[in-house]
Structures are given as structure tokens and as C-alpha cells.
Amino acid sequence: MEVEIVSRRENPLLQREEIVVRVKFQGGTPSRKEVREAIAKELGKPIGNLFIRKIRTEYGKEEALVHVMAYSSRAFALIIEPEHIVRRNEGSGGISS
Image 1 (cartoon, helix red, strand yellow):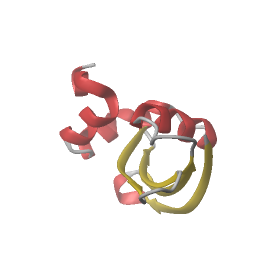
Image 2 (cartoon, rainbow, N blue to C red):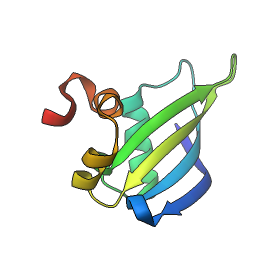
Image 3 (tube, one colour):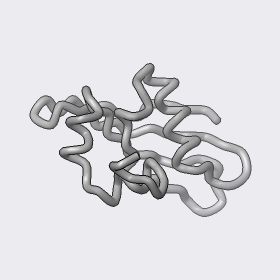
Image 4 (tube, rainbow, N blue to C red):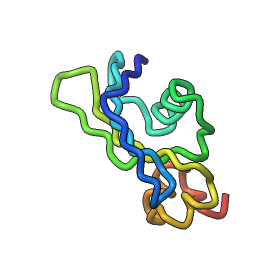
């Protein structure tokens, strides 16, 4: 999987960086977990501080645009991010895991 940063925007009020990433892959769209791991590695940030808001693919293409929120701290992320986004990114355990 290849990761390319398309845009970055600092949001100091919410203590996060809003990032759009292009992910190139082979075969089917990778899972949210695999995408988070690849983006965390590329950005050098802890995976627990990254939350994927949207993965958008076009029919027939082996690439996706991913909207990611990278927070300065996990505790602050859990306050700001909607609960359903946290559950999507961390599996069925959600906030309590």
C-alpha cells in the first residue's frame, strides 16, 4: 500500500491536523485498520491519535482519498470525535477499549 499526502491543515482550536491522503492499493479496498496503520507509519504519529472520517474510492480504481484527523493527544480526540467515528476506527470496542 502506497500513501501520499494530498493536503494538510492545522486546526489549533481543536488541537488536530486535518489531512487528506491518497492511498494506492492492489485488489479490494483495504480495511480501515490497515489504512490507519499505513498512515500512522507515514506520518510518524501514534495510531491511537488518528481517526479516519471518510474513505472515498472511485469505481474500478485501486486508490482512495482518505480524510484523517490527527490529534495531539488521544484524550482530547475522544472528547472531540463523535462516538460512531471512534467505534468505526477501533472496532466494536469503541471508547471503552
